[in-house]
Length: 196
Image 1 (tube, rainbow, N blue to C red):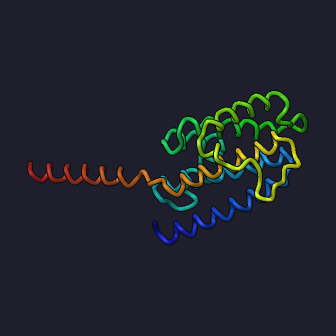
Image 2 (cartoon, rainbow, N blue to C red; image 1 turned 180 degrees about the vertical axis):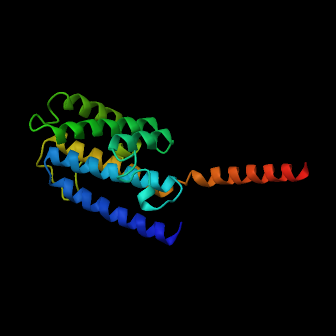
Image 3 (cartoon, rainbow, N blue to C red; image 1 turned 90 degrees about the vertical axis):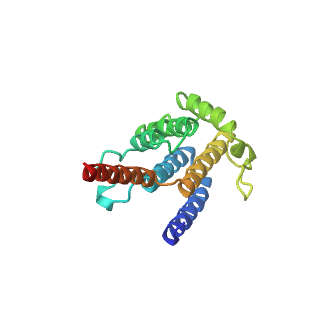
C-alpha cells in the first residue's frame, strides 16, 4: 500500500472516531442523518478507489456527474461488486430511513411506522453478522441513558461504517486487470496486423 493511501486511511479512521463520538450524543434523528451522510461519503471513497484515477472534476461521484446521490452511489458500488447483497440491503434501509428523517418535519421516530419496520428489518439483517454479534452493546463510557432502539441504531451505523471503511482498505482497483487485458488485446492485434 502506498504512503498516500495509508495517510488517507488514517484520516478516514480519525473521521470514523469523530463520527462515533458525535452520534453517541445525538438524537435518533440526527444520528440517522449524520450516520447516513458518513456512509454516503465512505461509498464515494470506496468507488473512487476502485476506479481509474481521474481529475477531481471528472470523477463519477463529483457534483457535475450522474453518481452524486446516496442511492446512485449505493447502486453503483453494488453493481460493481464492491459491496454484497446483504450490505446493499442494510445500507439501503438506512438510506430510506435517512430520507424520511431529513424530508419530514414530524413523525421521525424509529418506533413509528414506516421507520419501525425498516429499523426492525435492518436489525434482523445486521444481527446475523458475526462481527456485529461481537460488538459491545454500548459505548465505552457506558452511556446507556437512551432507549434501546436509539442505541442499537447508533451501533448499526458504527457497524456499517466500519464495514465500508474496511472495504476501502482492501479493495483492489478494478481497472488494473481491465487495462492489462486491453493492452494485451491491442498488442495481439498489432502483432497480427504486422504478420499479414
